[in-house]
Image (cartoon, rainbow, N blue to C red):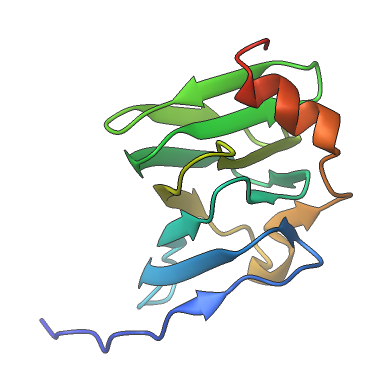
Length: 138
C-alpha cells in the first residue's frame, strides 16, 4: 500500500470546454492492465464540455449543483447531488452546469487500448442546446 501524491488542480482547455472548468485527478492506472480513471470536475455557472464520446462509456456522479447532460437526440437530463448518469460507449454527449450555479461531479471511465484516444472530442455545444436543458425543456 502507498499514499498517492496529490495532483494539482488543472483548468480544462477552451478547445474542449465552454466557460471555466477545473479538474482534480483522483485515480489513474497504477499497475499494468489497469484502466480506471476518476476525476472531480467543477464547472462554473453555465460552463460545459464540448460534444464528445468515450470508447468505454462514462459514469457521472453529481456531488453539487445542477448538472445538465445532453445527447444528440436533444434529450437533456437534469441531475442533482447524489444522482448518477451513465453514457454508453460511443454515445455523443455533453455535460455542464446550469447557468445560475456551480456544479461538481465525479467523472469515471475506463481507458481504451490507447488512453490518448479514449475520449473523442467534437464541436462545442451551441447556446440553444444548453439553454433548452437549463430551462427544463428537454
